[in-house]
Length: 226
Image 1 (tube, rainbow, N blue to C red):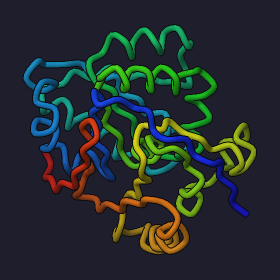
Image 2: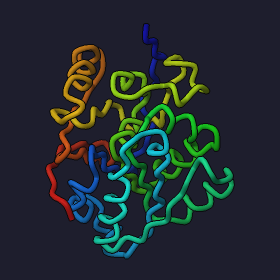
Image 3: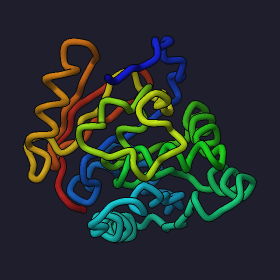
Image 4: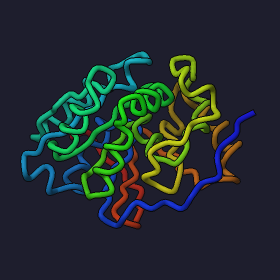
């Protein structure tokens, strides 16, 4: 049985700006539209591939790197599971943008917590630092990730003790469902929507779609590769 904690109201301020995607490389053209100040400034992204360490394949990580590079954004690869808490916070504070890759969402949450990176990310986003999530990186922006159990396994995240301790970043007041209508996730995404659609604000998105959040406004967008 899946249990989730009672949720508190989202307290992220109107300065917050997020672009949540299923496959970032497929919709990278939306970055200049949603975050023009990032592309125009030749910014640096704190590129967090941690979720991909516990999943396969990993082609989407390299595809995302190339997409940022084509947009003129410098990539600073930040391995949360290999750095100290102090170094993680220093680079998140220094860089202009945060990107969190796809992979295993439960492993991602475990490693972010282990290094207190979840706190560093949340504080940065609340203060106005733009955030781009891809698949697991989008899911973890929600208040609780237990719903993604139908897509990801907790086997690589023993510290979470199954599904009992899955409170996440709490950057948005809805739950992204990436890869809607796409193989190999047809059955799992339908199960998620069937089980949780009547209980929470679920937002399924296809691989060519993104959810843009700016302050209190949320938009569905369709993009193309950069």
